[in-house]
Amino acid sequence: MRSLLQLFLILCFGGVSLDAAEQSLKGRLFNDQENKSKWSAQYAPGPPKVIPVDPPLPEPPIGREWVPTFIDKFDGRRIDTTEWKILGDQKRKYGYWIKKNSRLDGQGNLVLKIDRHVSQDGKVEFHASGLKTRGIFEQAFGYYGCHYKMLRDNGTGYHCAFWLQSKTQGNVSDKGRNGTEIDIIEKFHHDDIIQHCLHWDGYGPKHERAKSSFPWPGIMDGFHIFAMKWTPEEYISCVDGIETWRTKEGGVSQVPAFLRFTIEFSQGWNGDIHKAKLPDEFAVDYVRVYQAR
Image (cartoon, rainbow, N blue to C red):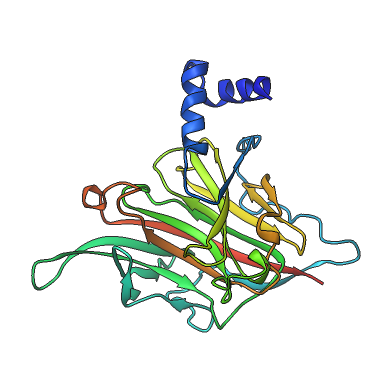
């Protein structure tokens, strides 16, 4: 295993000494002491030389075919509120979700923005944005994919995510089988490290999670594909058409989940938002969901 890790580190970190690179990677991947957190070292092959805009779908189950169930190319001038609920105007952790910060740019992209606002009483507020399909579109199992560009200053007290959430994720029984938060992609820092994550049994003392983090050179530049195949037996994550994580942690959710695109506040453990270069935004070219039938 160490010889494989050495080769991986040399390829990823170039001229950095092996010991320094290995310690850096270990720190980024495994230096988390939260109770009940399960980590997975991920030696993904790395990004393709040419990043696909529309990679082929994975093989469906034998005797079935992929049928599209939800597709949004974000064409037009306004977000389709028959497909999405725009988050806001409401408090969200360290700041607020504000509806006007979610928009279409008229060039085929959803744009979610975070900015700084000074209230009438002189208080500095931070306004972010997001969408969800709760109560509109919810599905268990299938293929979920999106094409999006990262926040510029990601990792300065805020981060972006494409994720699925079930209404019953807070139920503390049967592990994640009766509801799991499925983070298809989260980006916490301004670096080449990305991650997939699962959360189940709520967010209180019974909370459990599993996570995979790994380097993906160039992830901060341009658009990338983030996708997941969810079956009754496992989750299979992909980045730019390449498989990056395969897991059965949490027992695999068996209940429908809805889509979410959000800018999340992570002040403190993820940098100081007061030092962020705002405004900042990320763009989504498309989201597509399929079901095997």
